Length: 79
View 1: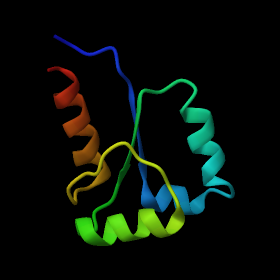
View 2 (view 1 turned 90 degrees about the horizontal axis):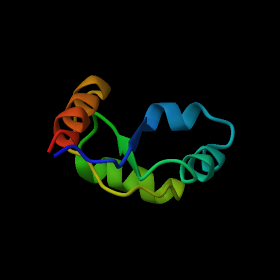
View 3 (view 1 turned 90 degrees about the vertical axis):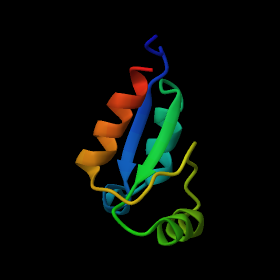
């Protein structure tokens, strides 16, 4: 059964280009169920960068491209 939850996925690279990434999280949290940050980096590097930047995310991903991450989200949402 499909879920009614929505997940917003940010790439670390996109977040780093925003002048105020914390505002993107604040805004998204008003209309989204889950926030995910994706990166093609190794998981421990991604976790360190996310932690150091102070970003909140609801779950971690495995290293993959943005296209792969979105494909995983779409697949998981179907269950």
